[in-house]
Length: 457
Image (cartoon, rainbow, N blue to C red; front, top):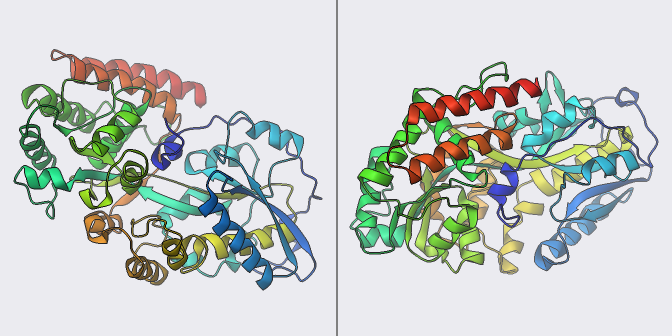
């Protein structure tokens, strides 16, 4: 899994265990301050994680500019930025907590939030989060990631859902309408056959089946069909179902009956990126950041690609990241951190949503992510500004953007990486063996998954 690819970063699970938490800041109970009040005028310093590294000068410059502008608005608050890439590292997370070097406002993936909460490694910010102006406009399914019961433990920075990435240029060459991408899996099969028929080396539909990526995309397809990875109690597998069987049967048909998936299999993240960038791959499951990676790193062009909703999607595998607070942070630091997060991550036309600046710096503008607000007033404002300063063809992503406002997002299952590794076996078998027994593959995977889930309960 490549760190430059956001989808894979957000999909990567991190095993966190309970550890003692230290900080150079004095501890204080949240109840010491009236809920919802603004930061006090007394000087307060906060450390904030995930400052872009020096190797990404455009992003770092923008961050530093925003810190300066924020501090001008709030002269009593000093932000000490901490850079690291990746922004969270399982090898150092526990050491930072134990050693008292964890930032006051620290970066997390969606997949790790509940593990951090259960381990007592984040502050309950419920008494203060009401001060965030647009809190009520944030997507409920996104905010639910940071909730545990009636308590709130953080705020989101990004959110994405899974769709279907396709090569508009190949669609045209194959006699397909690039402005009318497939809406059903039957239409995907038909389009894949036509693209594969363009000649040697052309692959209609590509899929992962190694390095945990196969199980990751199995989950995306399963969610889209309305299936579940685990049962309601989180202790048993639920993917050995009609929906899970349909995922594998669809791939088996495209691979062996239609011959639209190519002979080379056991593919991982970079393989499909390279194929898409090389102009030979017609379709793959992915989010808009796939197009950005293909453009930036694999010689593709934004104009050649589009993204639409996952066919027949009832739900969508989502991912994202955000910030939580050190449990040793004082009430004043929590309130200052919330002010910063609202300024930099959640306000239209500011911080990460300053599209006018992004365009002036030569960064791509127009991709329909992050989607934090849906169809609310701030969400509409962000969309309009994004269109105004767009440097990529916004219309190519319109079907995805429209669907994202109605499709329910679902985060990854517990023990995601372990389950993905197990399901890699089923995915690779279906794509490399014509006689693969789907029922047996799912039964074997279910038995292994149940053992993994039982250990976590």
